[in-house]
Length: 262
Image 1: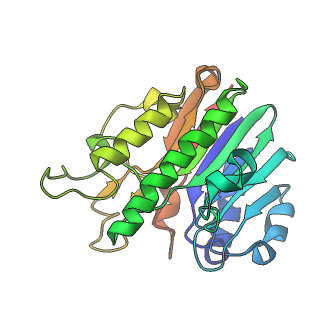
Image 2: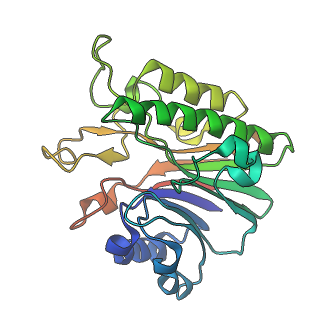
């Protein structure tokens, strides 16, 4: 079984690249982020024509998540509210950033964590969102079901995951101590970074800025992650970052991460 995650930075612009990639890699599940389209505008037929089912939580021009799967999913829900309640979720579901469903008894969760950069309000929004994600995952983990959470987390877990060393007196969003701590607390619920099971080396990145020849110079960040509970982690046989799509003409600035399980 293969599960992959990919921030496509507009599904309609990258649809041919995504379909070509799926036909080559034949993953069972692909979690997509930053689809940037409402549900009615999602290119369903491109996926169904090659044997995939689509589950979409969309938003015009911004955000948006989807799961495409070779099997139909059960218990599909969008956002925090179905699990945490509308009072707790508040207006955080206005931005479409979470979708989940069950595939072969595995709870698959696709997330697009807010970037949090630019202005202080966005940073605090990100921190609150991560706290909601903690509560959301805690609910699922109580039932002891295998969980795989995939997505663009917009956090480099440690300094191996970025091409520079952040300065203590000049914090960079995505590397701040509080963001990393909140991600560590989420992992402490019983989740492990699958990539790090197989590779502990630096300079393995999943995102490169379009500017300054960042991809050619490998000035990247590893911010696209796959986390699983222990039983599923024990079944993991590989996890890799596929940089090939980043070499294409007009690519997403992110590239896929793929985990394989026995």
